[in-house]
Image (cartoon, rainbow, N blue to C red; front, side):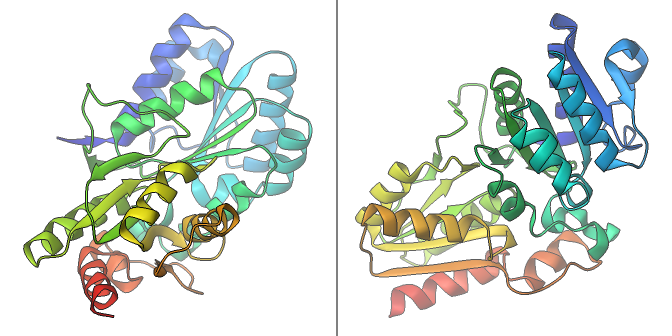
Length: 311
């Protein structure tokens, strides 16, 4: 099943808000793009339209949090991180306020909105805020779990996601715990550690590689901070080959934190490499073109893994 994540975002929030009047949704003139218009119409006392002013919106959210409210703020991932980073860091993190942030159209999911709207550095920025949590959504079930987690856990919670449709990786019976990774596919030769929409390409690549005689494990590390290093370490020791893939710059992203954690834990492996954006800005294009251009598509993953196992 393929689901519009913007619809899930709105539905889960609406359900929570009906049972807790302290939840307040703040928008930066983007409620139409993320389906929160129905919340504004049905729960107007719990909705604030802040306009195209993300820095001010975070300041408002911090003030609300200081009075016991639970703010959920949304804007495109580039604007809700880069544009208002000082407010997030000081009014949010430093002041120990509970602010939940939904950064939509993360990375190449911005597609035709182009380079100015394409956050390829937001994971790195948000990881740098002490004690912040960073979640990269791979399907509707992860988004639901992330919103529930953000509601229940005080602090800075950053959820990055596409707002468009993604196929389901999980089901109603799946166990998704924020802070713990999930095994999407077992394998013995190589472990692909992926996050966000890149999990889908990793899964497809692993299935194709299986037909070529290469057994590839796929891990969904939807929570990048805190990182489930125990899961990664167990598969690193098992396969001895780790390849990370992410819809983000290699600098400051999933690959860097995986490598650092493995080294700190003293896990020695034969091979480690990263697939992700390398010293590049965003651009206009459709999703398939952009994934191929930045080297995070299924074909690139397959070719890279074949090179790794041939060494």
